[in-house]
Length: 255
Length: 242
Image 1: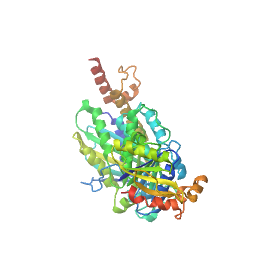
Image 2: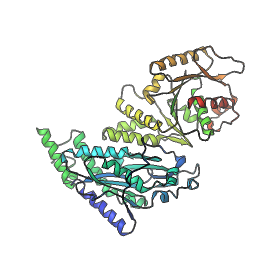
Image 3: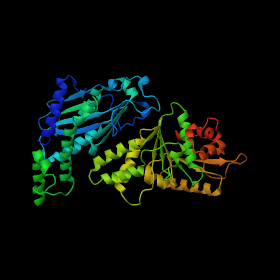
């Protein structure tokens, strides 16, 4: 499958976190009263917790597979939101003018189990990516830079005080993905345990980016369709399914 | 939600009025969040408020042009949205976006449209958006926002200033009908109301305090409550928020 290699890395990462007792496995919530109609903006003044951004370690990955994950789940490595933010009480907010202190490195890895449909792989990727973009929760500013695999999230103090937690946040992504007809299960892994914990996912992230990049170029641009001279040969070597997609496109263009 | 465009002839004090509005909003608790857009290429509002934007919208547009070669529409929209929020300079409950240099005519229409869409999405999250416009309503419509709910025309007592304000109202009427009001700026003590068909909202007196802050390049957020000009602009808040 397309993401076999990075998925193996992520599976190993989860296994290590589980073995060391750092992993929390949660069943997604069944509904959310936190849903918002539009992307939110949280200003620094009311921020209780800031995750990721371009000035802290940050990773956002989206990958899919035909047989994993086995069920919907929200996984957390590191403190939950209120703990990570130092608590929900306004008194713990950074003093005005002191600069943001409650900023933490952050990673989110969304693994989606999809059924069939090899021919529509790129369209499905686009659908899943758009579903991820659609997630909007009250009091949560969520922005992504897809090409940089970067996430920036601010959560306001009022939402932390009301009890917004990682389970609710992760579940919002599960629900949005599950609304797609070809999605069978979704696992959302979130890492708030610090920079080292985020950086351990970097090799898997690099593989995901290469694969998605090649997939995008195959479908969006006129590219070299002769595998022997193509610049993506090495990436296809690492992801067999990518080569099959490439060949399929090549055959289509020859017809 | 109100979107207020401050328009008028050059040199009549639009930026000063915008800065005084920011000061008036900053002083009142519970007034809600406000987004200010400095659409003056010289970045006068950012200077008046002593705020340093991390990047201008023009910088962002160039970044999007560079990214356009290797990203598709969804990626570009997400990037525009992310970088736009990053470009926001914050002061308590106020946010400021600086437009920067004017865009090149006719180029990159699609990217400009992405950017405008991102600005409108951002603006939806603020109770009030105030645009310190360069000149004329067309510029506001084309470059920053499609929808302006309030047109705050600024003029001094000069006939020319008032004519420009009247002309802008005519153009605005063609592209929709926002609420329109005239603010007459720098009015000497002995002056009467100007002859104009425009609805006069307020007469802002000449204020040595404002002039001093301007000359000394001090932040308008520090203008004292005793400022006569600030007092008049505070009286405008119910109109712009209405």
